[in-house]
Length: 214
Image (tube, rainbow, N blue to C red; front, side):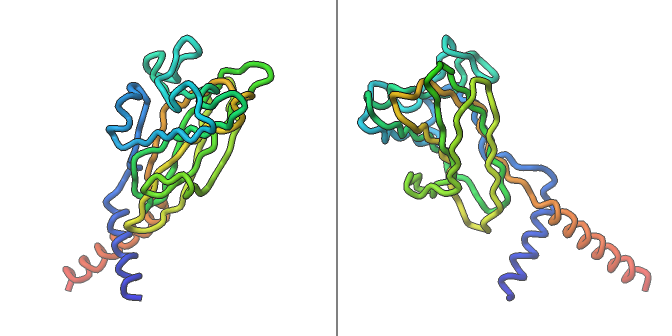
C-alpha cells in the first residue's frame, strides 16, 4: 500500500507539472537512409525474399508525400517478396516509454490498381523489437488517399517501454505499392490527473492560508 500511495503521489506531482502532451517520436521520413542510425529497425521477413528492400524512400513519380518534399515518405512494394510469396516487411520505431497514456498516429496511402490491394498490420512490440511479440495487432487495407490511422494505449506504469511496428503484409501477387508518412508517438496525460493535481494544489494553498491566519 505504501508503494502504491507513493506512486499515486508521484503521478499527481508529475501531472501538475505537465501542462501539454509530450511528443516522444515525430518522423516525417525526409531521409529514410538515416532511420536505422536513429534507432529504427527495418526487417525483411518476406518469404521468399524478393528483389527490393523492405522499406525505402518514397517515389514521387508514384505519388507524393502528405507533406514536405515529394519523396519525403517511406514506401514498400510487392517486389519485397518473390512471385507467389508472402509479404512481411517490418518498420519498427525506436524504444519509447509506455508509462503514460499514448496516442500513436501515422498516415498511409496506396497506389490503387484494379485487382490489387495493399495491407498494413500495426501494433506494439517489445523493446528488443521482436516481431513475435506483436500485440494490439490491427490490420487495414490502405486506401488511395492519405488516411490517418490511430492506436491509443493506456499507460502501463513507470519503467515500461515498447516500440511501435508497422508490417506490410499480404500476398505479393495481389499487392502493389504503399507509403507511410508523418508517424508520431505522443504521451497524453490523464485529464482526471490534472483535475486531481489541481484539487491537491488548491487544498495545499487553503492549508497554508489557514496557518497564516493563526
